[in-house]
Image (cartoon, rainbow, N blue to C red; front, side):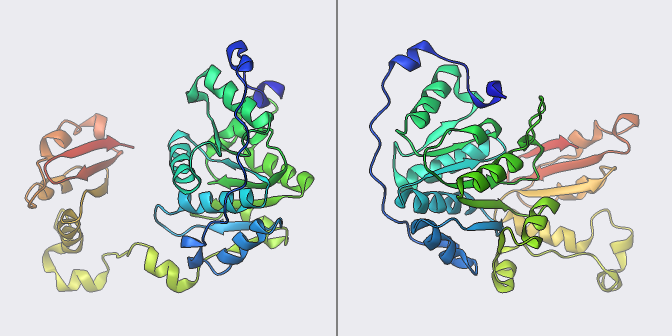
Length: 314
């Protein structure tokens, strides 16, 4: 357990003194948290020294990292520390950039294995010494020794990356739940979807749901349309077409805004028609190489761009 919680020592990092801690920042504005029914109240509770516990169903879009930065800023404004655990390095980079943009440099530490042993240990020492009171990192950061912990945040608890494969196989969600209970601090479990474990926290009353109104969800979520009997009746050739008219129009309209992701089961013939769309390059040759026994029974996924296309298989 200590090997998971404490990074390998670095003599050079230990010899360097950590910077002096900065004074608490100002309470951040509510910002995009206003889209949620109790978002403003959650920030106010953290800023006033409270310990609210919530399961957060985030709206679609890229605002989630900024919203995490705001709850961290509200916690720091109360003179307490905050800990954020995310699944991978890309998510760490997004939260790191959001925290830097909102709070400035020197107020948080980044704990990831990609940082290298010396830098990682130096960041860990800064947290241990109390120089920094906010931490964002991947799975191992769940053990970060944040002083006067006021909030723990876990993003996307359904991701397998949060589960440690080595004994005793702790899960970041369970560790942060224990820390929130023992330190009597705030708890925020956020994701675009709700796992069974998150739903159980709400059902038991231990945490409150932090959700947006139905109108906000409809305004932020993408439009989903299916080809039904009515569409087939209006388009007599749709039953034999490689790409239904509705899908063709969606791809054509989407290319005016940017790349379009298309996924079809098994075969690759539907890609032929995409080459005739303005701004889409030919992908037939790429998919032709996937025909035969090696390409059967798989799902073809490609991104059509204005001028080029990328290919991946899943």
